Amino acid sequence: MNAAHRLLLLALSALLVQGTATAQRFVSLREFLDLVERNHPTIRAANLEPELADAELRSALGRFDPLLAVNYESKVKSGTDKLTLLEGSIEQPLDLLFGPKIKAGFQRGTGASINPEDLTTTAGEASLGVSLPLLQGIFTDARRNQLRKAELRPDFAVAQQKLERNALLRLAGQRFLDWSEAFELVSVADTLLKLARLRQDFIIRRSLSGESALIDSTEAAQEVRRREGERLRTLRIAEQLGVDVKGLVFSDNGILIPDPFDAPQLLSGRVDSLRTAETAINVAFAARPELRRVELALQTARLDSSLAREFMRPNLEFDAGVVAYDAGQPSAMDYKIGLRMQQPLLFRQASAGVQTTSVAVDRAEFSLLLTRRVVEVDVRNSLIAIERSLERLGIAQEEVRLARIMVNAEQQRFAAGDASLLTLNLRERFYGEALQRLVSAKADVERANISLLWAMGII
Image 1 (cartoon, one colour):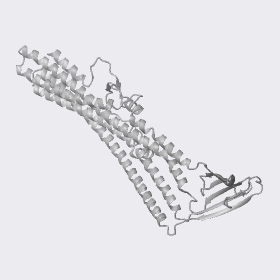
Image 2 (cartoon, one colour):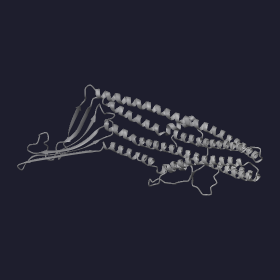
Image 3 (cartoon, helix red, strand yellow):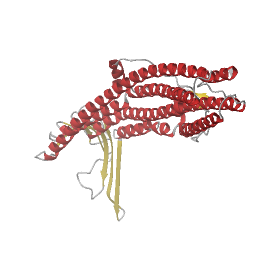
Image 4 (tube, one colour):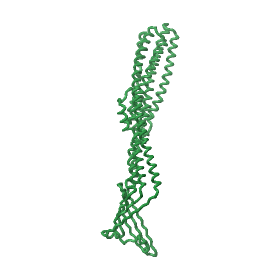
């Protein structure tokens, strides 16, 4: 009887320790997140965002490329040159105040029937000039506005990339912790089942020797079956969660890795570091990609608003240049100037554009205000979760300690014949429930920690 008692106590003290002789590949939460981030399709797709941003920026810069235009026309009638016209120009828009465009041109027109305006000397006519707006388009225009917005695109791409990464790692971290919790609950069920089987063998020997009633062996068998069923339930949950977790890990060639690891490391119930609310909120304001995206959207809306206000001024364009009417004698230079104006008189379309873009700016500002509040709420909720889960962890540890004392005491009474098997089973059940709450409390601490890291944008 004493030997059996010692055996039960030894099994009880080994609770939550796995007794497998097979070497297992354990993985920590951080190692798992690194594996997910390495090759997950969501991450790889998000990594394409900078390429799209580069293409958009290059497209906007393309509107400032030199523009070459060439026109050639020739007509011959009865072997006589009726008209030969060659026109060529190259225009270079500049990303400067007033949005000037520099233009160089050449024209050569000959023939008996050519328009006198197109008639030139045999050497042709060359010109060099500049065109710039005087009222509308001084500070910005459609070309420069598109470039300014495209210059924001790389930052937007980085924010979008980080947003998708953070969302994936948060989901992956929560699933991993669900698996870790379920894995440890299987260990609890295994140990409780082992205790019930040892006690069943002990009671069967006592019943056969006539030291206890045969009905006690039936009650012991009933408890074994109950704990076997509970173990299978927890095992099913752990195995399914393990499949979900492993499904997030991909190889270099994008193929799902069936078994990248065997089991999670035991829950630590610790947090990275405790932070004050003010510190955590400041970190979040600087790092959360959601905020950066809204800030960039606000900058874009303000650029469009500035462009809309330009259309409230008359469209007046000034041209000036020097001309060599005989390209063969470039020293003889003349000049030409021009002034063009084209503008609807009532400015109704322009004023509607100003109103529309102003509303877009106001909405973006409200969106920024709301997003900052959401980020702050996320951080504060995560800090509350950490504080309360740490308190719960302390209570759960004390509950396990007290439950262990009660089980040990009940074991001694049962071995001495002073306690019933039903009472001992109940004590062990209470102890198992306390252990389950301890595992849940540790998992909640780590879940809250993951949530805080995500809320601060540094997961």
